[in-house]
Length: 281
Image 1: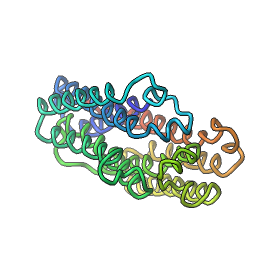
Image 2 (image 1 turned 90 degrees about the vertical axis):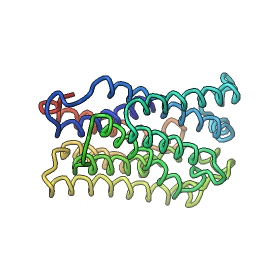
Image 3 (image 1 turned 90 degrees about the horizontal axis):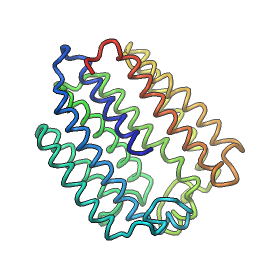
Image 4 (image 1 turned 180 degrees about the vertical axis):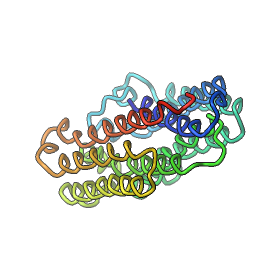
């Protein structure tokens, strides 16, 4: 699921970058190489996170293979290294910009999970890192499609969806509070307690959806339909996180996060629908 949404983000950046180009200007083999490289990079980042999160994953009953003992840390580390090299090789074959973006992606991923002060350990670091990972992905797609100047739709859609990742994505912490507390992470539920954390999450999600929709409406942006989807998703997320729908069992506590994920998928589908008649992709 994580790799699919990252590829959708990459594809969204590519579609927005190509939308302003003349038909046929996109180098499709290079775009495919860049997409494979980015998949390797995001896979490496996610696997690295699994290595770093063993303690909290086991405490929270997560089903990731390292936490279950089906994949050793040593083997996982070897795979991370191989994927990182593959990502950089693919990126270097496309362009210097793609190589720099890929290196930045791997660097932020390492800083998020490991590093001397892992960014995942505190709320500010989490939001900054996750937002950066999203924005880098949209820019990588834009670059791979031969994007020149970063246009307003690329920047607006990429930034707001990246903020949706950083703020809306924090809802996964509701079900993970036990393990996060054990691992010393300073997430919203750990810092504020369950009730106040839910209120902050609702306000944050609503703010992203509202600001995105208003900016697109004022600017007459082509990505307005996607913004409307995010606005609707933020309303559903807020209603879910503030009511009994997300209380009780772990599966119920994860409902706001599932709303967050579904909203991302729907927003990207809406974007592709907007660009379907004009994009050379």
